[in-house]
Length: 568
Image 1 (tube, rainbow, N blue to C red):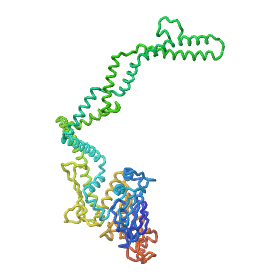
Image 2 (cartoon, rainbow, N blue to C red):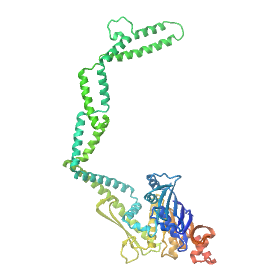
Image 3 (cartoon, rainbow, N blue to C red):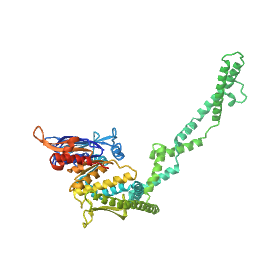
Image 4 (cartoon, one colour):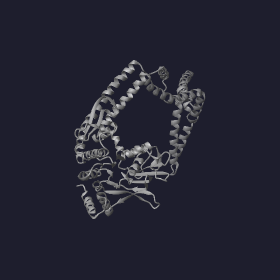
């Protein structure tokens, strides 16, 4: 939701600050006062094209900023985060500087960004229905997006997207295989030979460290044997010499423990004896481990085998290392890469069979999407046509055509076209080419109303959006103007609506009203001011819109109009 719009030096507007209502806000004023500059400002912060010629005379640059509440707009938050921005206190600041000469500067929450980033975030926040902006709905892609949102096709579209992506990946893989050149075949041969060589050696994780430890033991066998023997002789001589009479360390400790236990006087002697017993147990474990090492001797044949194995592994690490783990990882990746380089007839045949299965699945998923689209198109067109009757377009008709085709693309298998008939007997023409600016604005209003109602009836929530309507009241008057205002107020129950209007019957329905006026400044120049009107000021503005004057009669009519402009 747009919380605040600030403008400086844009055309005749030197400085303006608008805080639109959460519901409906009307922008009114005399023709030529500068209401269009408000739309220009919103287009600027929405990433639209800039024009240095619109900078106020005498100013170096124009500046516009919109403050948006985005806590209730996950899509806008996601777009901002994708660009590296985190909303602060649930708000985003979209701003644009346009110099009198040179390139404009786009900013998101105080940091410079490409204009495309500003546009992607704004697209989730603002929809402008003006004569220039809504021509975008004439594109096939926009019409399809609108229909899909109305149909609520998220699950079916996601299922189709998954199969389509798998099919495209397979097509790309087959294309690579079928267009292999000699260099790719050579690469395949290299990978195949390398994999075979590594597999012959069959390296195991951690094997090199284990082999080097065994080699060190064999090369130092004599030193190890001497040290083990001497240690055992000191700890327990019976392990190395039969019928030995000298006492070993273990025997001496046992004798000491027994001597302490023979003391029948209370004190620390028993505790010390326990400690000696514990030491004796540890010594026994050491003696047991060392005695096992006496016979653990390896022959020179073992050393030769180990050195040979280390040499083989060294050869692998020199080519595909530096570590043995790198060799194994390279081999595993090479196996996968070889699959894509292997263009054998059998391989291609396997992939083509898999591709046929994927195509089948994609067609079925596309048919499910098409079925939902056709149902939604019929319903949407019928309801929009009925809605047009209340917008002074009772003889107009909308038809939405969904034509299924053989060729699949990323969106499915449908050609979608919105066809508009402005009056009986008129040929059906693509929307945007068969309607005037005012008719197109009211047609878009009808579409947005029906879409919002569909979400509410379905128990869901309308995606938060700020809708801006310009020229929606062109060619409308009397009772139809009152109904138009009511329909805008109805849309404002589920979204924020800003409408630029010259009709009091429309403005009277707004929750807030701003008046754009042009006048002479203190220095004698002409400038546009924007001011909010409430209470009596608003009654006077509605009276001016009704009759061009503020007579007693027009004021009474204005009060009556404001009181009656309330939804049931």
